[in-house]
Length: 247
Image (cartoon, rainbow, N blue to C red; front, top):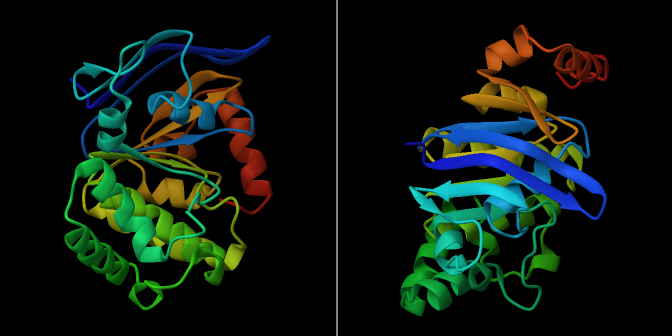
């Protein structure tokens, strides 16, 4: 049984059919990357996995438990599956270390001093220990996104969802964020990420999924998707990426 299983996921907003029967299995320790044009359903799919959006039909299962539909323990789900967003979402009135420690204290019941010590240890790993007492508005965008990733890791999740985490960053800040994701992949973190960083997707992924207008059109190992895609639409999408110098 896969760690995360999506079966027949359908999602519409009013008359806009966003996800059309998505089936996808993600094994423990896999990195699965969602690619496709803007509006293809990548972010919505991630939000459905973490129950930030309700699905119209189908099921989402995590570690053998169905986590879609009524009666789901959302706190338990989000302790198991963390999410990092495009827009950081840090608490502006809290220092960096407090941003990281607050979740483990309030949701996991950790001792506040122990949570702060671990926050500092995690910041050390991403070369931000010297910013522990800073506030978010005193950090660069890349630093804020690194803190957001650390905050998610501090909850000790078994999987992470990463939604276009570099899209709001200046180009020179992208590498420092992607390096953390590389480290997480090497450490065996289960991840599903949506990204437009194709070279990074090629390097870090176990499986690449191409979404087109809400459908899962093609999936496979990165060498197959980027080297010999089977679907004409996948080939056309990647041709545009190559012509834009992004692969």
